[in-house]
Figure 1: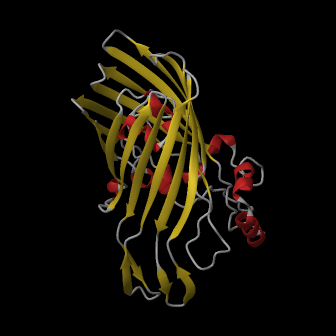
Figure 2: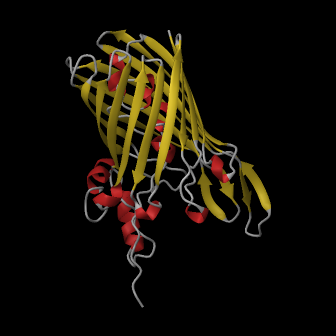
Figure 3: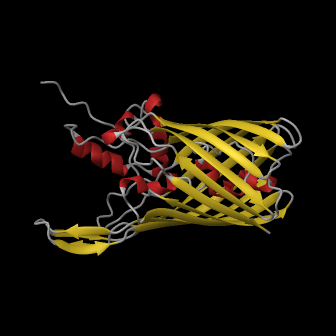
Length: 358
């Protein structure tokens, strides 16, 4: 009999922090890090915000999540605000709220016992500034709250509670030319922060989705009214792979896994013991955006996650937006892929967003 090969999975708490709330990014396969600055960059690479033309803006986004599976009460909603302090710096703040819908709990006999509505949110405050005419940087501080289930259950001595932690982001943006034509480069270290616990058994705390993202973009102007921009992002979780339950040393490996410090976990995510093969650890986004007079936009993109243990997720996206006076409206669509049991659960996902400039 052949030995079962352990499966490595990078599992984290609060995975909603990896969902882009931005409809512009959603229309380009989640591409954003090095594309030309836009208000929704406050949810990601906020180093670009000092380069915006508008002095300040308020934005809202809404994404029905997993709606193609028949779920109607799971969604991601977000709101944000930015203000340029001067020509060289800006501040921003944002809130993300993720509803996981209504969940019915039952006892061992299948008898319904209670209902709960788990939810999670994060609140950010960021500051960004120019380092030179070509380079800018951003920092973000974040509070994360996650209430999956609360209380204790019959036969279980564990008292479940909401978890919370703090984290931060560091971002950089480089532009080749003053008018943003030519090459751009972006980098984002996100969700660098503490572990999170959901019970009184505080020995085992879970990692949050620390991530390293690097992007490149290129903008060319066809004429005074028309421009086209292309880009690619590569993202990698800085989270160690959890041990497999089929491993004969699972108990010892599990204890070692949870005992890692946060800093050690970032480094261990690249090691042979805890790391994922390069071909399975990267998420790649490629996309393009057509811009007509900064008033009308068309977008397309492709997303690849080659982790075979998580379904080798790949899909196309489309998006558009238009600006009317001081308001901009964005929408993106995730094109269905797969079929039957292999159908992408995110098929037909729509993202809606609005930006109001002052």
